Image (cartoon, rainbow, N blue to C red; front, side, top):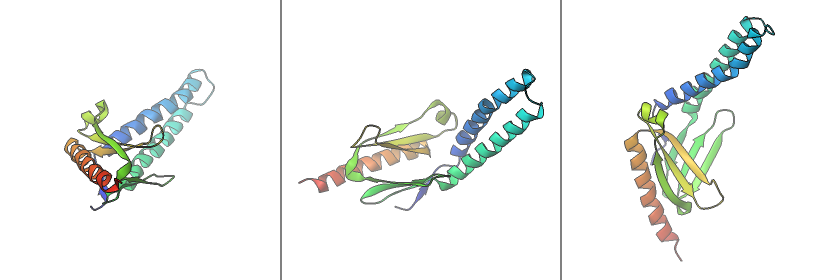
Amino acid sequence: MTTQTLHPRVQIVWVLRAVLIAAVLTAPFAGAVYFDRLPEWVPVAAGAAFLVLGVAHALLRYRRWSYEIREDALYLDRGVVTQVRTTVPLVRIQHVDSRRGPVERGVGLASCVVYTAGSRGADVRIPGLTPEGASDLREELKRLAIRADGEDAV
């Protein structure tokens, strides 16, 4: 299988998250202006800086996110500041879910969550898929994991 990227609409989710985080981080500066501790321009500058950094991070995150299914494993490549490459051997896959949170439903997207054997919280999430794409990916990984488990049996 070729390298797959996320649906472009995931950028909307990540940019909205960046806007929300910028607003929360700017609130203390606005509070300080209210109590005459800072000049009025400081929250505007801080908010603009937080917003620019957050939106840039969201857009770069989209550009750097990819995944690939090969005959032996699922490969994920992601990260802006720290690049993370994850390999999930198909024989380690326990189960696969597709998930749609309220924000994802709002933009018509879903995620695929792959749970692996091992330590607690040993799972990977592939965001930014169409609902059909998440369902197809879930079924393909399930099929490949069953086949890999049969080949790995003693």
